[in-house]
Length: 108
View (tube, rainbow, N blue to C red):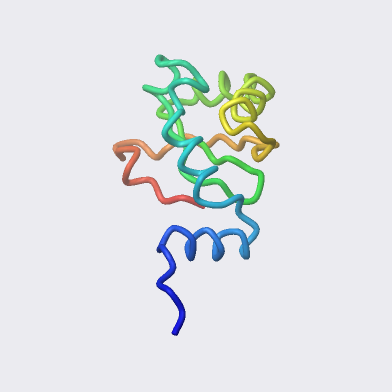
């Protein structure tokens, strides 16, 4: 009989099989978001998914979308620093629908 496998290992294998960078990378980027973009920008934005090498970020206003789009190269560089590897190569920014909280915004 095989030894039990931690759920995180199984989830990581599934995510990598789907082309995602895995659990550790996603958790690191999401938990370090304020360090990556700064505290003010983090108050107006939220990473919602990491699909392959594309980080999807939702913002609360069009002005923040413009600001983060212009900062894409810096965000990619900071993600690489946080993860100690190049996982994020592209950032897609979307404005959340009016009246919705960040947690109500579906990923993808």
